[in-house]
Length: 590
Image (cartoon, rainbow, N blue to C red; front, side, top):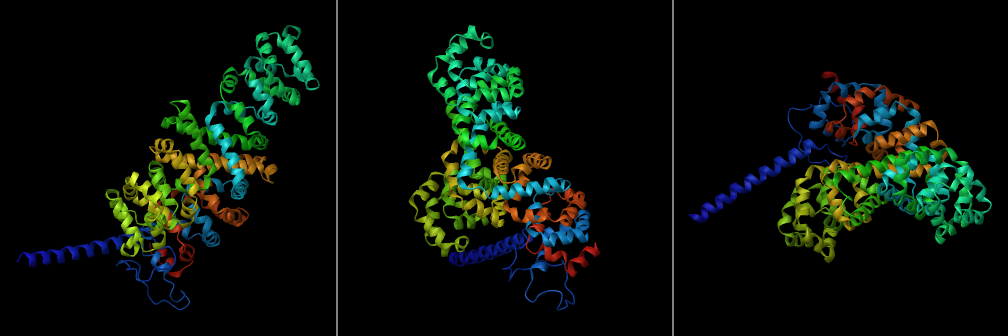
């Protein structure tokens, strides 16, 4: 009798499980529009769009992407939205969407920012050029720029002061070693910056400067700080730097107004002298020299660095000790050095925060991107492994037996055989729970194939995050701020790339300045452009397309924050749907 009851119970439980799985599959298909092909067998919900008398010219045989897209909740929400209907019935917008699908998919993630950018075609075009310049950055240039970024973040107040006087900044970057030497003697430097013309003569005879500094009473411009000049004269290393580059005296005089303004602002001057800004410039002289030549780019770079510094301060990162500040600087350098990967993560802030909070474990996942994507696509299937990592290891060793692993069996087997990776997962099993508790964010990342590929194939970014785990974990407390920092680091790299590119003269123009300002104020929009630089360059060079975008700016702005619009517009079938007679019938019926 008990056996019979037990068997009946199993049957009931099994039947309930089937219903749950079927219900989950139905819900997933309704919330996430199908991404192109591979939709055979999908069950369409009832009482939706009814297809009637389809002619052979209406659709290619076997192409079900448009009707499938039209049967999602995202479509049902949007077709009732007046702003969406306005866009969808505007012939210019339809043409724009059909000719620029990749750009539109990116723009749908942040409609308001792109609608604002479209109002200034010249700046929009420059921003597209900047995205292309960023895409062309090689690894060594990114690494050099990353050190500059870390220096600026670590000494933000000092660099803000220097950037307020771009001519002085450029002169310092051009003569980094002697200015770093002068920075060790702030009173002497202040006297020289206050009266640059008086010191110009020493450009021709640096030995004479040494003699005067040793006897400052004999030189009126030194008399106000005699002790400081004597100390400078006795500093062999500093004097060697000045004698090796005596043109520093000419640079002071040639930019007298800028140096006098800097010296005349006590707070700004003290910020520079009390920081490591000048030694940092000397340590990265070539990079600073290249970047400081473009004042607009410099302002944009400084804005990005200052934004990151403010967010780090708010999180309490780097404020505790010199060692903590070093860790913060290293975290900033990592964000900039692998800016594309971190910006891709930042498209889903909650997912990025989870990865930062479990850096070692996700670094292990990143070495097997196909397995990582399978997990991100179905996070809840892996959540229970937080209680038993050995069970995960067994499942990964025989992935054909675990449905959520069958799409990447070799990757999971390789992960299971990686002792170091498995040790990282055993040390932080809660990474699996983090996947499950942030399921929507990880699924959105996995569904964005391009962004996920940029992120997951850059193992060095995850390794850098793991190497600075404490700093990143502290930053993960504010997911939006962490994502913003990643996007600001990317904007910094883009401004640096533009300043160094062949179009540097163009970037120094008024439109270039506007583009840099737009980049700094809309880092998320630029991050999206940077993923499809060629698509945006094509769009920016198409006057009709930008006009169509600008003409529909209000409707685009009204759709800002709409997940349904983003889901529709990023779907491969969206452009085809806009030109489909069945869609026109649905729009007209509302």
